[in-house]
Length: 426
Image 1 (cartoon, rainbow, N blue to C red):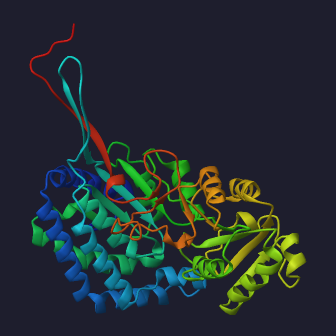
Image 2 (cartoon, rainbow, N blue to C red):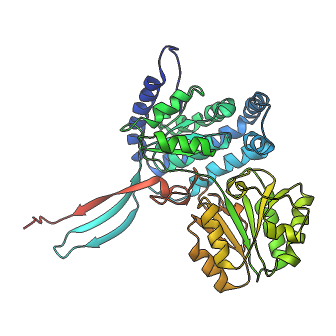
Image 3 (cartoon, rainbow, N blue to C red):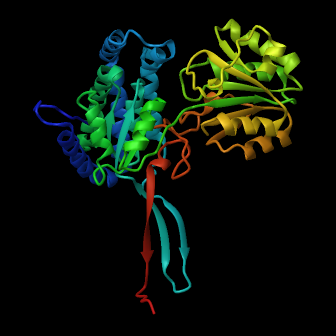
């Protein structure tokens, strides 16, 4: 993997990006034909290099955190690396290596009446531009998934994580070198200049897909300015609905995890919807559980009638992705009302229902439009690793190409092979 070196300060962002993208296209063509053993060896060698470089990565990350002192607790959590998080990155690379190679799979095959055999074959997308904020581990996850799926990738991390991303990249570069694969298959931006992002967004014909992963401002800019197809990782306005037939202890356990396990991840629950039939008895317990862990609340009038000490929600709170220890609370009248609330305020990311009523669960799962729906499980399971993907490059909330955690299969498109015996068209 090559860092994009900025050897000539006068070189502008467009020239830098075009140089990188052309190298990436050449690398992608080679990587698309690379055998699985070479790709898997690169991933395993990269994992070993990450482990060896743990002290250097932690030092770079400490400098990043020190250089951004005005971070919210949730943002700081996303930025901070620890030995266990670096080990998780290394294990993620090894898990991706163990997954089947998605390239070259026969997705479908059929024979026409004229004897032509038609096969739909999986192939890489090409060159991917990955623009992300704050979470430096995204660099390792994206590099691993793109490498295994035969795609080249250009990574542009946020200003606050520049040193961390560079250290991860330096450690991982050994993997491709050891495997004899082109280092230009994974590149990182030379700096945090916003002009480089603009160059990526305008690189039609050089970059095949842009994946933004970050806050609403980043995703909005990418969607508005891109001349390249975009696979958007949008807001995680996730809901947990506690139905009237919920088992109370399960509801308490699942909600606590869904909100407080890690408040800064996009799969964290931001809104609790609780059925009016169970709210008087269960809501005070749920509030007490979360309050003991440092959670604050924004509640509608019906919830405050049960728990008067809850702060009142403002008009915009139910449309806010807090990424913090803050939970919106609303009382609803049944499944249809819960679905209506989610459709009005949600971002089509992840929703959960807690209930022992199978019919209610099926109604809820069928009624939401979100990429992921869960029954009796925490919204924080919306994660590529938990899906068995090894890692994820993002959570897609759009309607085209891919939805939910984006792993190896979602980073492939397809082509057709047609096998004939001399047929001509009449």
